[in-house]
Amino acid sequence: MKILLSNDDGFLAPGLAVLAKKLKSIAHVTVVAPDRNRSGASNSLSLVNPLRVTTTENGFLSVNGTPTDCVHLALTGLLKELPEMVVSGINEGSNLSDDVLYSGTVAGAMEGRFLGVSSIAVSLAGPKCQHYEAAAEITQQLVLRLVHDPLPKHTILNVNVPDLPLDELRGIQVTRLGTRHIAEPTIKTVDPRGRRIYWIGQPGPEEDAGPGTDFYAVNSGYVSITPLHLDLTHYEVFEQLSGWVKALDIGQKSSG
Image (tube, rainbow, N blue to C red):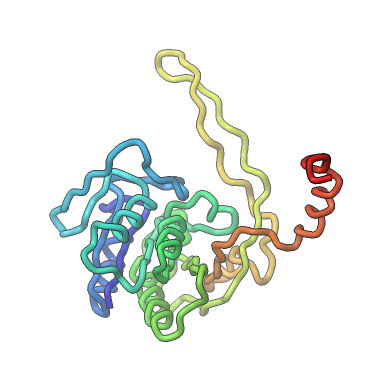
């Protein structure tokens, strides 16, 4: 089996190294990762500036771009042979709830799935991440399971592992995304030269974090696995929008 491994914390991130070592026991692993931390890059692609690839001392391929750039480049021309799977992680910190909209880790997996390859995003949930080996073990088990029982098209797994030793994890729960309150206010300050600058505020606190959510699972010591569907169409509002269209005076005269 061939696996493409990427992340959004950069090619020097500890979670990337631990996961690469673990997955090499079951597959041929190629690492293509950003040259620096690109957390929060979401699904952005570099469309103006060229991408450059550097082979690092440990054999990883470093790219001066986003996680999506890394996966897109790898699958559309960089690699001679396409992998059977894309694994993005292990992220330093959780990607729960609304985080998936901003996460470069999740975006890397999404890009893999967009390009036809089964994909998993993995994050270690904790303020000071330590137990990457436990998350790597969980990831390996999920990879092997996914090989034998593939998920439907346009589906990825978003995996969040509590930052605990493997023997202290309580199990695995299949979850839905929780929700947060709105983000904390932007922090306004000045730089040393007196110019106004802004820091993006912290994510909002948990709002919907009850049983069944990714929040609840991780807070209870369980690994959370949330299936994400890449088709963002909200089919339930088709009927309502059809009513809008009938009421709008656009094209009515010409068609009459």
